[in-house]
Length: 530
Image (cartoon, rainbow, N blue to C red; front, side, top):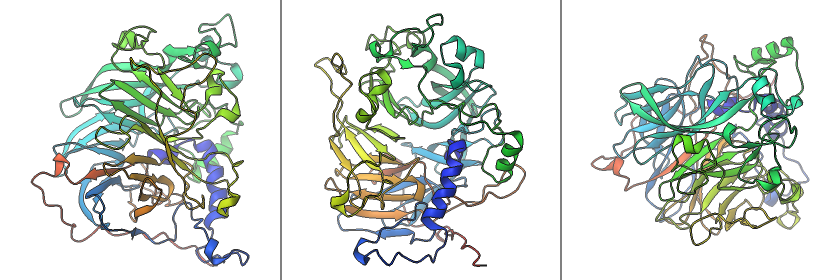
């Protein structure tokens, strides 16, 4: 699955340490110094905890949760009792889907032989599967130069907006003002957004595109293009931000990592660090004709204008905003445009930014899953001082009477604080260091996907959990050579889960009963006591 490959050069170490710290044995003793009332679930990946429906209450909003089964071609729809009532089956490993009014799903699928891109969430295919499981459209966008990765979103006209990498050379990056020590030998993978018009059973026409390369600024080298002061141009991206190159390793070391399943087939010693900005989420607002996307490497969410032509999107003029493809709004890390320092940063590796839909409480605001805020927050009054926690934010973006996002001179974009947030009082019981998401529901509650554990739960505005379900399923998608993937380290993980209300048009005329038999649950193998 695509998120398994994300930031692999950093994540391998994190995974090993996490496994040791959180759950190296299912029967590990609790610390005798920890009172029963303060015991906290530390099972980050959900290896040996109860799964399926674990909590429900009266008067829940009727509806279902749609999610992808890890290492599987299946998308499952579960009811409020935790029963699978429908499934869609593709032909490759899927990672997330959107339900259309006709009952079909648009889903991302991992192409088994995409070239070049070895980590950072590439998958290469976007597909449409009917309610009955027929493949209606199978579009491949995976070449040596470009590949769709992470997220996509479906427009009202049926087109798809997708995030894609475009590989650039070392020389191109240098000519655009990136510091040499921040450029991998094979060059960086820059980001772009493409709008795909589905055609036929496998075709797709790119009808609009936006490239981050057209909206860069740098203050490193006055002899190169894009030279200027990033502090004077919050609408542009400082090209010398993003992750630095990780420490070099030898070919032998990389071969060992690949043999251990901790590096992808296309990963090389020359492309370590190519994924410099790592966009991981995208959503569209039809009322504003705007796009919001997330970059965890920048710790920012960013809004751009979609009402432009492709030519205007490559410029600084045009569209409803009059600003072409420049940033209209950004939030989370104002030091990126020199309006603050590290103390002003509010996002840390975030995921799944989305607008709250019309008709739902908070409509027009943004929700974002803040994966791992800093550890210098004092939670002593909550009986826990751990640094490993996540927060869901709701943000109200400041706009003027004309709908323009407000930024005052020598100040960052607001708001100063979220409108609403959810954080577990014990912190450790709600934490996912990567993937994950949140969705506001019509009843005012929020569905949260704690991605690492595959935990989906609904919280009230007051933060009370009223429904909880942990994905108990895992598939058997094999490696290209036929070898099985190890279920370590994320057997139940979920990149994205969506709440589907019971009155969704896709369900018209359909009777959703639990399928019989229910899919077989996956039991994570217990370690050999020897």
